[in-house]
Figure 1 (tube, rainbow, N blue to C red):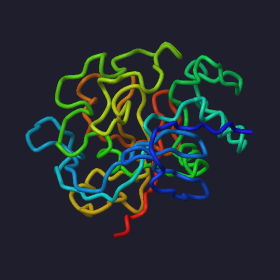
Figure 2: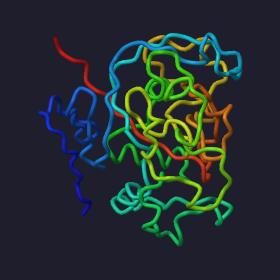
Figure 3: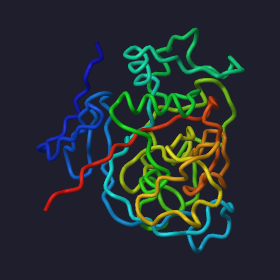
Figure 4: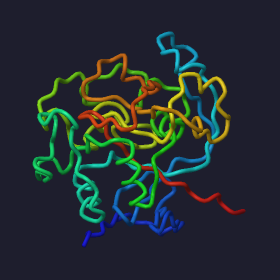
Length: 281
């Protein structure tokens, strides 16, 4: 039976939220925890932020324009990317397939369907969009929208990177690497200097992250200003963040990439989010 983790915080529980049968407890103004997978979460407050290429920047991709204001309701997002250790509990509970690269076994971290203990704290990779969606649903959560992901990563000051506008270094994130198996990735949450304004870790580097939205290169020009959910249909899903292999230009927090939802590769993982109820007066 899955051991339930307890997030010990010296404060009273403010709100108990049931999401798909699992409780998301808001234990502090900016902290929550899921009772199903035990993953700590950060509460992102309701309000506006600017999404897309900052107005002062000149190096954005065409699909990252225009910079536009978006209003989001409050939500919670995993503090860290989903790890192999958490994914193992999901597999044990559901019988879901193990993560594997579809064509190249040298890019697998799980061996023979088994998870080496040495990779338990690394972000899970070789999962497609449907694997990520299934995990989040099992945990009583969901994948974040593209807008939610970006707000959690950059805050409200239109910054370039999760930590601000200082150029990235290896003190901020894991990037500019070549594939060396499990040595390529680092455990989640080790880059204190790289966390976002809300305290969310690894929103740049280490692995790309699936989000809920279908990809459309021109979506920003017509997206709703409140709680955008992406196009209603499409052929590719959005991945955000940046992986261990990227160089500085792609570390920008507004970088968008389209990916086949069936793609499983050794540089893409995910984290989950949860909807919070609207406060009553």
